Image (cartoon, rainbow, N blue to C red; front, side, top):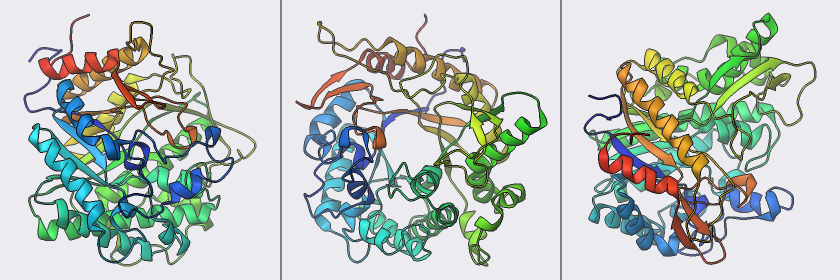
Length: 456
């Protein structure tokens, strides 16, 4: 195998999330989610933007699937909107909502595109948040019920399932820093949400596996290489703390059935005595068929003196993120493909032969359609090239990396940033909803077609 070629059977795809692309928030029997409430609250999102229309994928899905086929995508990772299936988060399924996903999956399969379903990408039904949200243990059972409903409807069409996307974001951005829905700033609730999200993953995994032993089940984590700014003991401890909260707090219970003791010590009184009950950790550690990794950048950290306002790191609020000297994306994130190799190697050493997939990797840049009608996104193309090289290097070193999904298929509602950050390899004109594949999409299509990185 040449240095540029990927293994036979390597999965190539692109990813989106329901609230970011679907729109149609009041159609098809869909209920209200925490992101509907959050985005309609003044001051929560850039420009007051909401996902009401987004990329209008709910109405344009046939054309979007044809576009995926034109690009040569082998797989499409998308999320199911919980409030589209259960408007209030409980009770029988809304069949009109399930019909939308049935039709989408059937269309994908008609083009030979493998559907990868994510059950939860942050759109908790508002009614469940009103009842306590993820800090409430009852939400765990509600999620398992919902997962069962979706699998009952799509299990004959879908073989790959991700329970949660980035539970760190749901817990710590949603309940600690408050920059994501539901916009809470309660560190104890963030810790409770963390445990209940992981427990919900475990229960959902058990429920689906009981009826579909052949289903490929996993979870997706956003993982980071974490580096201290200096070798000073305080900075080394800062890196330990952030690595613990960002990475080990999720990897250790999922892969080893335990929470890291040093992280529990850091959290101290934020961990309620009754939070982790008998049997919880065994449920969380239900065997996985795959692990999804979302990678964007590295965290370089140092010890600080004053607690940061709205920190997403409970118990470690004084840790400071340090800007590196590398090029940055429009999000201000360092472009650091070496960090991807570090993350893949680290997870492989802990997870052994468990198949790994890059379920998100990409970058936001301020793209424009030029006079020739194209989008010449040279920076994004370079970002993809360097990170795909990193993937290839990890595979050559023995990491069982089995696939790569670019984030994202198309420009969309970027959460608190509204429509001001563009991650797509396909440009979306939000006024007309016109789709224009960017140069990065053409580059990616070449990689998919040839199964190797183009020279140059």
